[in-house]
Length: 390
Ligand code: SF4
Image 1 (cartoon, rainbow, N blue to C red):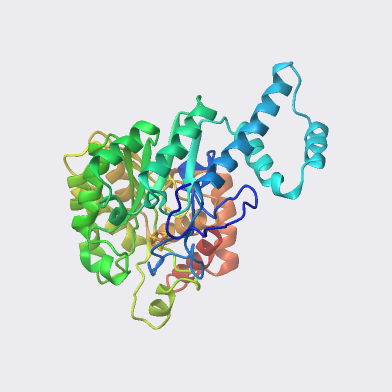
Image 2 (tube, protein in one colour; image 1 turned 60 degrees about the vertical axis):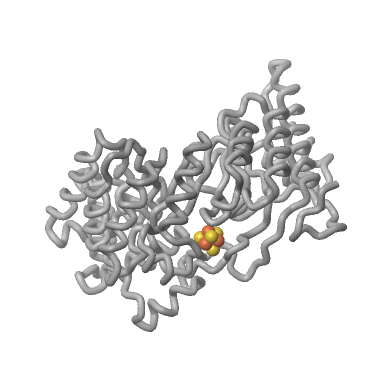
């Protein structure tokens, strides 16, 4: 048996494990936990793994997790093959026969079955940090057990990817990893340093180009607002420049939010970090999208924190449409902008057209009045509402 560093030699298998997050686009994926937590864990904007310790799971434990899910999937398929449906009573009978350590795998399998079983996501924050041969073993096992799966994806850090040999990255792709999600966050070295991302712009670019060369799809996350008011423009310009040089398949927007638990909160509270208002973010996005050139990436706003869920499209053909959405917001009166901000953060609006829906607009207007929204308190009110989504 190969023993990796960060793996406890005699670690006991305690049943199927699941980590805390996955990208929004992997909501229907089977989550297979390869490592626990984040090996970096210094980013000042990130709430996810603070006060946790990173570890690699023994490959044999990951394989056991896959086997456990496969066993339940096979049972479900046996039931449905005979024309029967999986009724609540069947489920209860199966659950009653399982011991506690088996239940997590059962629920993961059932949720995956009812979600179409099309994709798998490897958790946690940087699965590519394990030995390439171990990752290949896990990927091959997944492909063997679930041959119908269309997509296997993972998060990875740029600073990890640049250390993997090109041939190994290709082998990882050939073994079945279709897509890597990278938190680029910003192309500005000043912003990256300020938030302790642990990667410079050139590292992000090198890693991105390397992933593309290995023919694994690349999804890059950008965090609108991360530069605050002081670095908003440079954040937009440098992020667009980095992405123009990488040309990833996907650019995903995941705006900054500042809950109390992140290190950046102290800077924000003490006035060292001045958060952008929503209209400032719209301006930043305008600079960013206008500067995206020579790429054929798909831009997605698939995180609930985005101000416009329909700010999406493929470059270059949809660029004008995306810019129009941002201009349309800027052309609203200040009061209409506040109405939209409030409606969006309440989860009632998802795009600007919703302002024209009488039923939705009436609901938001009522909240607007009850909360006493003004130009002075709108950002506080919406900041508090956004914390629900983190
Ligand atoms: S590398 Fe990712 S998971 Fe780790 S602290 Fe930074 S943002 Fe969070």
